[in-house]
Length: 550
Image (cartoon, rainbow, N blue to C red; front, side, top):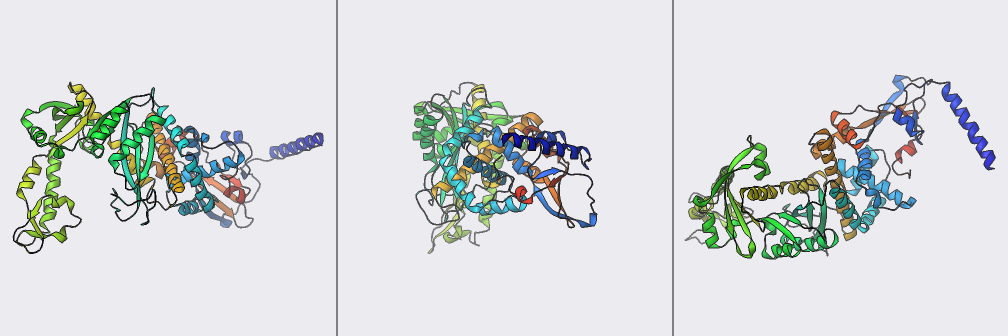
């Protein structure tokens, strides 16, 4: 039977080769297509078939860029280790790649994800499978984090020793609390909705290192202690480093915890909350020293608008208890901005004052910024307020001042420049949260069980890592600092048109020309795209091309 089968196969192959040699193709296949062999749902367009233009219908436009990029980035990040190599697990791999393609290009709810894959990519996926994928990702959450951490570290000669840390809130379209979803202070101003806290660690380039999630009522200042303990125990148990965080993390307990774990810190300081004697010393500007600092030592927003490479900065180093150093800086441009911001608040306040220069307390709800310039008015039956000129004058004394707390030495100008540069790299992690929230739509969340919440966050975290990896490669190989928005537009622009012949039902897939941005993306990912038309031999298999195990 084996010998008979071999003869039949040989005979069929000879017959096919003879038939192919007697025909010429309307469009010659590319080298890449020839190397791929015969596709199970497509074949090169053959000559000999009469095509009547009036019978041709533009049946659909298929978006292909996101899926092609997700396939390559999945392999480049070593994510194939998330699942085992069994046939059942490989089905989950295909589903995860489609979910990642959607999150990168058209983030939405899981139902919206399934609809987009069906309409834009002509791929059939059930909602139940997508929900079950979240449960599976929850089970592999630690594996996901370790793979991405390892991939990020692989871009450096040694483990990153400067770690950016921040925490944010992610809200739900829900008002019912449970163990993880709780009401708390919301950075998205969604105070009625439940939420969770997400803490993220990244490199100075915004490449992800680790993340943790906490119940919604957790104070963000407490998140760093738990984060550092787990992170050091599971990830960086033997290495030191410097943790950079904003003023929300500034507590004596947090700084002691970082030192206990063998880590140094650079944390934003709350100058107005310090001791009276320390505040008096800070406001003594005549004792400050001037020096020239590069623009990367200032806020990211300032450095973008500044046409010069350097600016004059005044600074003072104050020794505090516990071996801490307070570095206070004064910058003229910051002073101008602080004064302008205060003037805007006072202008807004003036609109609320009545003819006697007073405002009712009930009219101040939601105006916390302006209320700090008011005092209780005397001789009123109902609670009312008026401008406090003393508070306004005192606030002006702090214009242009900013402080950071660190346990690193600040004895030389070079050490001061380094500390400032490190602190102001925090904008990269703030940008990372903007990407996660706005571009990848990590919130609002529509999942209620903890397993699916964790699965959703893991999915968005992988997508974020993919975007950062792609940005890094584009910068290194193409010298193009593409934003996530530009990458998304390029991916969505890589399409094919499916044309159907009404007379015989024949379908052709015609790839569109690539944009200049997409050419760069395909080049850094090693994708060889051809514009040669193909004939779809099975529409059912084409719709399930991503779901079938290769």
